[in-house]
Length: 614
Ligand code: ADP
Ligand code: MG
Ligand code: ZN
Image 1 (tube, helix red, strand yellow):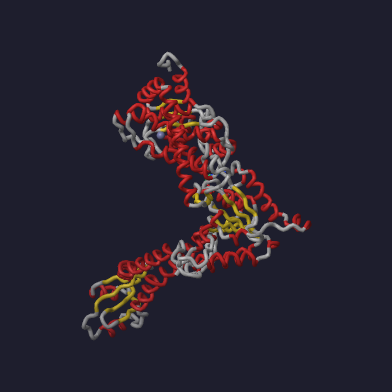
Image 2 (image 1 turned 60 degrees about the vertical axis):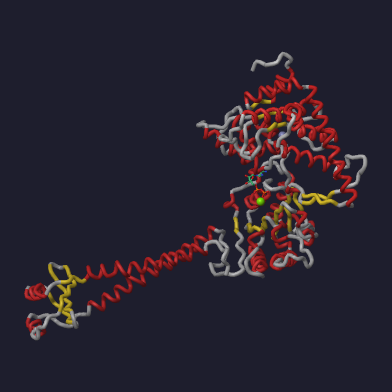
C-alpha cells in the first residue's frame, strides 16, 4: 500500500474515532433518550389516567402496557408493567379505549436504529468525504484518493497560490532571464513557432544549496499563468518496485492533459543518478526504472504542446548523462552563489519583512558576509530581527546584523562556556597571531574583527577578515599569504608559550586545502607545471577531489604540500617575532576586552606609544 501518502493516516484515525463515537452514542445516549420518550408509570396511574379519559389508545404487550396520555393537547407516551387482570380488556372497552395502538416499542427500535446508527454513520461519511476532499485540495488537488496506487503526488500551483514573483528573487539575473523566456513561450507560443523555434523541453537549474533554485521555480509558477506541477525527486522513491515509474507516468499524463503547463522536479539527483552498469549496490532497480520512465516520458511528449520541464539539483555531475543530452534537459541554468551586489539585494529583499534602523548599511553587511548563500543571508536577516527582539528593541540595527553574520557563520555565542584564564590567554595570542600576520602582509584582506568569545560551533575565538572588494582571481601570493595567516595562530602559541595546543585544527585543515589545491589544481608549483593531479566533482557541495596520478606523483605531491605550508609557517613565525612587542600589546588588549574591531586593532598596531585612547 501507498503508506507514504499524506492524509492517509488522519483518515484512518478519523474512522476509528467515528466508530468509537457511534458505539458510545448507542451505549449511553439512545437508551437515555428512549427512557425519556417512554415514561414509565405505575399501574395505579395507568388506571387513573384511563378513568379520567386521558387515554384513547392502549397497546398490550407481553410484559408491558403502552399507552398515550393526552392531556391539555400534549401527548406523552407511557408504559406500565402488565398485571394479572383478566377483566382489563373488557374494562378498557367499556371506558371507550381502543386496544390496537401501534406498538411504540417497535417505533422506538426504528427510532433508535436511525438515531444510533444510520444518522451518525451518514454524518461521518459526509464529513469524511468533505475532509478528505479538503485535504486533497490543500495538498494541491492531486487526483486519487487514499487508496490510489502509483499516483504522482505532485502539487499543482496556479498563479495566485505561490505568490512568489521574480521580484522576490534578488540577483540571479541570468537565471531569471532564461526562465522569463520560458514563461513568455508559454504565453505566446505563436511568436516562437512562427519563426520555427521550439522551446527546450527541459531546463535544469544547477547551483550550490540555498542559492534560490526552488525559489526561482516557484517564481516561474507565480509568473506564468499556467498550471505548475511541483514534485521532489525523493517523492518518486517508493517502497515497492515499479511504483516510482508509475508515478512518473501519472505525472506526465496529468501534465499532458493540463498543457500548457510546467512540471518542476526538485532535487532531481535522487532519481537521476548515473546508472552504473551492474554495480554491487543491488536495490537500485527501482531508481533505475524510475529514471528510465522519466527519460521515456521526456522523449515521448511533443514539445510544441507547451509542457516545460524544470528540474533543480546541486549535484549536476552525478546526473545520468542521458538526462542531459539534447532533447531532454538541454538548457542548463546556473544559479551561483551571489556576488557582492547580489548579496546586498538579497539582504534588502528579506529586510523588507522586518523593521530596521535607518542607519543600517547593507553594503557593509554584504561585504562581511562574503561567500554566504541566499538562504544564509535570509537567515542572517532573521537572526538580526530575533536579536533585536531579545534585546527588547523594536527594530534591528547594524550591530544586530554584524552579530548575526557571526551567528550564522560561527554559531551562537556560548554564554556558559568559561575558559580558564590560561586558556583565554592562549586563545588571545592565537587570534592576534592570525591578525598580525594578516596585517603585516600586503595583498591580504584587512582585519575586521577579532574575538575570543567562544561559539557553539566549538571555535574558541576567531579573526574575521573582510575583503574590500570581491575577488574572482587569486594570485599565488594571495594564496600563500592566506596560508601564512592560517599558520599565524599556531606560530604565536609556539613563540610565546613554547608549546602547542589543539586550537589550530581548523587552521590546519584550511591551510592544507589551499596548499593542496595550489599544487594539484592551479599549477602553482614548478615541479608539476600545468599538470592537473586532481579532478574535482561535486563542485557545489564543497568539492570532492579525486587523485588522478601515479602513486609516485602522489607521494611527491604530498611532500610538496608539506613544503609549501612549512615555508608559510616559517614566514608567519618571522613576522611575529619581528613584531613581538605589538603581539604582546595586542594580545593583552584582546584578553581584557574579548572583542576588538578592525579599527581598534589598526590603531594599536600603528600607535608607537602603547595603549591607545579609545
Ligand atoms: P535551493 O533550492 O537552491 O537549495 P532555496 O530556493 O530553497 O534554495 O532557497 C532557500 C531560501 O533562501 C529561500 O526560501 C529564500 O528565502 C532564500 N533565498 C535564496 N536565494 C535567494 C535569492 N536569490 N533572493 C532571495 N532569497 C533567496
Ligand atoms: Mg531546493
Ligand atoms: Zn586559528
